[in-house]
Length: 424
Image (cartoon, rainbow, N blue to C red; front, side, top):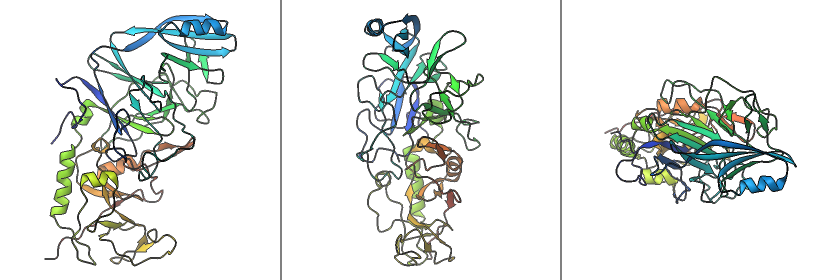
């Protein structure tokens, strides 16, 4: 039932060490138009054949733009902190044989391992939906994994560009720490939340923090792009744990460790649960026609509705087939519908199975739906995500469905499904 590889199709041969996976919230197992190359809904981090990590080495204090340019052109990784037009601190980075580095961002240039673009809530518009102006940085962050057990993964704000540089201009938040080393924040920041108790049904939300370019942990700024940093949080670290969330201001990523993935349901397990529900032949209590959840593939794509598609009255949880009556509003016919079973009025939506195994905290049956989108998964998984405040825009936080990023209802984040069995 469980599989360490999580059926990762791109996994190299000979069982290499898997550090973990980054999974983008808001996608139900794949991007709407399919995963393509480095642009996909989940990215597995494997031990590289040859280490490519870097660590700080020489520090240069430069007083002319020309001198700064000369250092940056040496071909080594470096981070430049521009304090004023004629004052720049450049920290050179040297090769680190003990770590592997993976870079995430909006850019499609070669240094980026995992290309991430803005998530569209609802998931139906498709990845080609134009974003007027993306808030995700081109070189947003980097994850550095230790090549030796326990394979610790750490996250840092900003990624090295094609010239192997990270450049923090005059307007970026930056400072010199008491021990003398420079540090800074990216424009919209990289936020991290470590759940209390790992990624299990007993877990509770942690506190959102901001990660600096050098990996220190800070309280959030007053606004997302304010130039004044928050306060240093000395007793917390940038080490990712199973269930850690990373927000790039436009997309939120879930980190799952290899061990954590071992305990999640596989695609085969989710398919078996789907077939088990359908085999029970749930019926529409009004039309008495048999209902059936669409295949996993159709659920991923949110393709056209099927005749046997289950629909639910979210206010009460009664599952029906589709019928075109009971409207309380002509403008938005499915927002106010009266359930024929109990007369409760509320949204009436089709049900779709949650197909991304990494979002499940257990292997329970799909008995609950998120409100108002209608994605279905286990009770413990629904209740876990309903309590997680996710960054929204540049200053707001709200709970959202992990399968489509739709904001959950403030009054009712989930609904227990009530199926009627066959009458024969």
